[in-house]
Amino acid sequence: MSKYLKTTSVFLVLLFTTIQGISQDTIKKALQGEWIKDRISLKDGSTIYDDNLLNSSFGLEFLRDTLIISIEGKNSITSYTVEDSILNYRGSHFKIARLDGPILELEQVQHSDDIEPIRLNMSFKPTYDLGVSPEFYTAKNKDKVYILQAGVIEPKFMNARFSAIDYIFANLKYPEYKKGGFVVRFVVTKEGKLLGQKILASSNHKYDQKLIDAINKTSGKWLPAKYMGEAVNSEVEYNFDLGWTKGDYAAKGGDNVSAEEYESNGRYYFSAKNYRSSVYYFSKAIDQNPYQIDSYYLRAAAHIYLKRNASACADYYQLKVLNQKRAEKLYDKYCQNYKPKSID
Image (cartoon, rainbow, N blue to C red; front, side, top):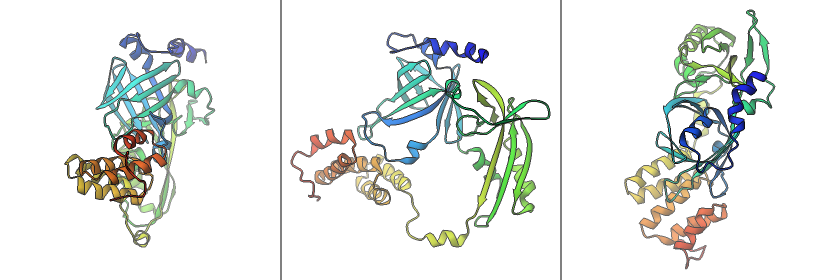
């Protein structure tokens, strides 16, 4: 514990109530280490309806001039800068609104008139770890091995496109639509090495070695888990429950396109200034998910370009009902003569 307090004291004594006037080098030094998402909200206080966004895991680990970004088990590395208290990386820009000991607050710099930026509240991970009691066991070599605990004791598989479990499954090449199940276990050491690969359960032993081979393909791509700021050995266990069949998929019927896919198509046509097509796809997205907030904003903007103010106002009115603060200003701007039930 004393070692931990010594290594993290620099963070705990930097009690910034404001970062105005603090040098950029000082801010970068205070950022060093790992931060995990505590809470996400819209900057103006509007309600977020996207459970995937609310419950998503997100982390930032600052290593000198390098930044590791962790999103839902996908980890990538990039460079970053801090200029005028703005954190910049890969086209993302966040104002550092608060850097107060173990608390970091980031406010997204607005990049669009139609979509409200987010606010991220993050905790310094070693401080967060103080409230955690992870499971562990002692290996034959007397080393502690911690049991994986998502967001706390979790090694980082360095791949921007795939989480570790998805990468392993992709390399397993198990026949699509064939039922099956596998449970695997392995250890990622505090040096980032892969050890102890073992199949714990298998419904098809013909694929056991193929699964071990797929796990071995992750070798050299791991960063060790950290606990209390120190690298530790961690045991990973994955359950591949392959319970689907072709018949199950066909039985779903209907429209299998997600609201996010429809919105993505709408954004494409919107950026190409094909507003009629964009309205079609944003409408499909909203039909799939009535809480697809960005689709309302973008469809309203497309209606404005098409001079369909009444339709735009219908969207802004609905956004007001959904507690979207920015929509109130847009409604006041475009909809002074609008009657809610009137849609052209």
